[in-house]
Image 1 (cartoon, each protein chain N blue to C red):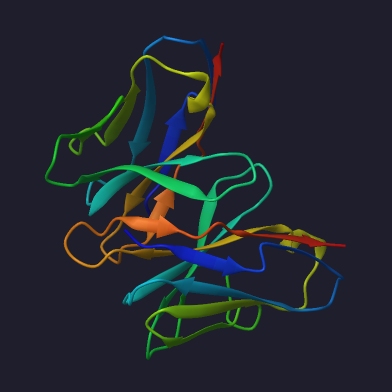
Image 2: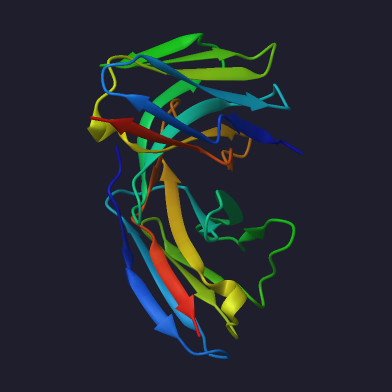
Length: 111
Length: 115
């Protein structure tokens, strides 16, 4: 059974810092890996999706990497802004397209 | 991308009653998924709903408690039956885009409080 772990659970940084969020998964037979953002009381916003055959994806200030052999993914946020404050979730997709979520990293960017 | 809406957005219910949550997708999708997010927790998959077949439930979730309908390729409902305070959660539906990417999009969620 797939298990997804995210560290750290919470992170507080000053505005402008670059930061890395970590995600690890136990079963490397994933279809893809997806990073989401969740604002308090809201649904999930898809940030980046990495196919199992890819190594990384970039969107604006966000860069996500995937290393299937080690069961790890990272989300890099450059030049963080207060508007980036949210909970970030990674999710591994299985063969039936169901997602297994990590417990999330709660990010606070201080102005 | 897919735009997904849910109704109701929130509800407060009495113990022992049932609530049906609706999920509407703006395009036809083969698969739809229902997730639960308990307070302070991450998302847990309840079941997979495919049109034309019975829903497939994950371990710990049963059809009598969470009956699901999938009458067509754009719509699904999840019913939370005989509710107890432990059912207080956010319930979210999702659907993957068609094609290779299979990027999943989520509805805004239904926040359920059971008294």
